[in-house]
Length: 227
Image 1: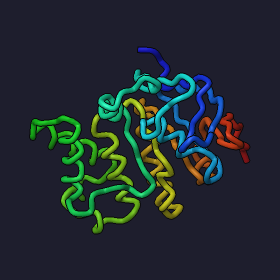
Image 2: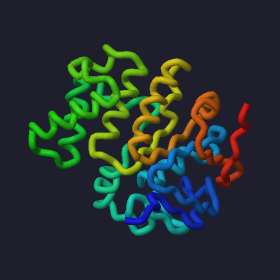
Image 3: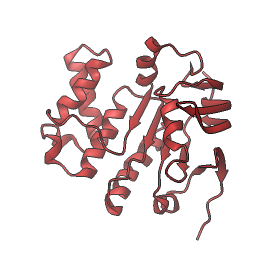
């Protein structure tokens, strides 16, 4: 397996025939932590959706975790998403079941069948994000920051090579954002690649990393100013 986890060459991204991003070329290597910044409507979410195959890639060449985005079949999408963990701004936890059963639902949906293995996996990922003691609570019984930790645990269930975090701190206060960011930093330190779309420039200053900006239909690397 190559060191490249994501490669885009001359990619253009469209939403309903409208060009959002044009002629994008980008390589991401295993173990990198990359910020994706830009104003609302600049194309961050469209890029993310293309990476997890919610938008079809119709122009250019793209591979992600060894899947070819240009030739990807509908039947392959579940297998792609097992190798990618996705963290959303609004958590997307199922409100009618406990934290444990939220994670169990994902494991069963992605092909796990052995109950002991599922229990062990859920315990492991909840422990890694500091949420093991809350396994039997309902989502409404825990805070927003705790819900996002659970969402990160859910993203880790299938031991993904790459985590796409789309505004993961967007609904959180500054202190809670830092706590969630610390969790993501630990995951990255353990070798997982993370691409994080964000508006939170305070986090960029506190945890500097390679930064890509969407602007004017293009993506380019920006050098962060240090204080």
